[in-house]
Length: 242
Length: 201
Image (cartoon, rainbow over the protein chains, first blue to last red):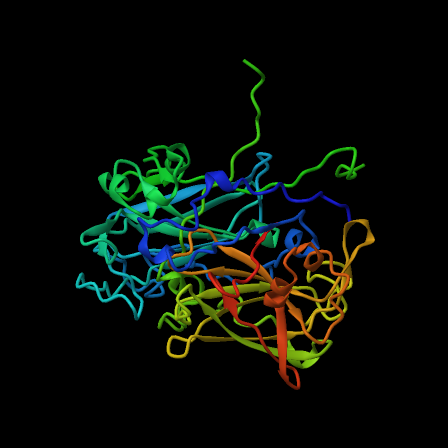
């Protein structure tokens, strides 16, 4: 197999600090000792492939997938779309993207969520897809509601969709959240504020995108995602195709 | 002004939150039947045909107060019993190498049932002792935590990662203890006394 080179070390400065007292739960769940840094090995550079997994036709359609197409979910209909790239700007094809979210009222379909906004009988709240050959993906869903959560006395989560992304390497694994352009709650959220570099938080805010909005049907939001890349130099690894 | 770098910056992580199971383990979240085929419920495509020793690793993820977390979700990735990663040439076709498992909501204990990995040679021909890579996420974990499981009954003396750990007692935090035939115990401590060695690789 051609050596595609080690993974580019993670730039921890752009990520949240593990310990952030503003987000109370992180206080007892953050390592105090430094991480052990090392160049990547096959254990980190390889990763699972999901070719054997049969995705259902409605898996990326959260408006219909809970009822298997029988009835649509309540809420503002939106298309969420974008590209998955690595740090070298290369599209990542055949990558698994999974999302989960609250319904239009801000309630999750989870046994632990007891918020009194009602469940929508037609909304489950999760979806998944595989990126195409250009790293492109799409989900059809409803805009999730904001909701209160127990942290400080009156904290609210901005509208958001959780994203879980598999690249081709296990150490590219990433979970993040997509926020919505113009949501005033972003500036008040202790979880969003775990990212200290505002320009990096801004990259998690999806803009309204009329180029993909379908008239009389749905609005669109664009959300591009970048995963770690791999270092290839002519001095240490053979370039692909050489 | 110097030239502009054209490399992109990785997207920032955010916590998986309390409801991560909805997205990754719908049955666990109480939403069984959401997908025709759930991802990662087992690392086997056909356990009866998988090569190597089947092992069960039981443990808990403890927070800094010593509480076994009820909401941790873990993913594992490993090579097969022959030291080949699934997807590579010659890999065991009955084994995917990837599993998702969660702490039990009542006991806080998780179980990983898999094959014991073989050893492999990495870049430069350096041999690693058998190990399983883990990635731990939960509410309150702002960026997923990477670590590894090694095995008490294997020769770990020359492993390149374990040998980089300066404080030798900390090596034990990465080594599963044998509790019976094919059974191991591996606890993860996020913080404080006995804190697990987490990786930045």
